[in-house]
Image 1 (cartoon, rainbow, N blue to C red):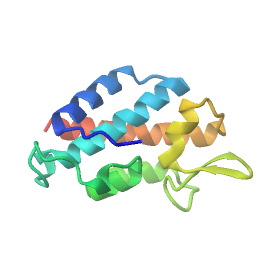
Image 2 (image 1 turned 120 degrees about the horizontal axis):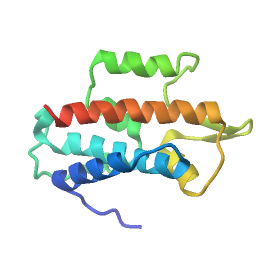
Image 3 (image 1 turned 45 degrees about the horizontal axis):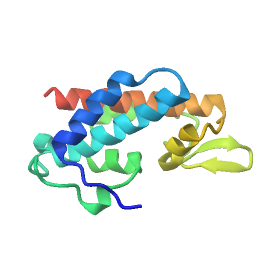
Length: 146
């Protein structure tokens, strides 16, 4: 399936639309995932970080669902990492994976598929992922308002 090119303006609008729809069901979590993805990509494509002019298209390396990678590339402030680390305090790696059952792992980059197809996840793990998405979404909103 070919990937569509979205400009910074489109990504910003998508972030804002998706963030208004995010709620507390798996369907809402799916929208929240895409909200964060669009927001992170917007920050990459915009001049907010003086990385690229607003009209510049995303590099192919940024056309991904790897939200942790997209966030890390922005080099966010330490307080954001502290908030994230608090959620995953007993985990060796923040967002490396979430467990569907004892024998199956769903990587964070594929969590949207679990929500899209109605695959049940361990509630505690799912709650951590949703909380992470909310923290990152708040960070994005703050950057957009600067």
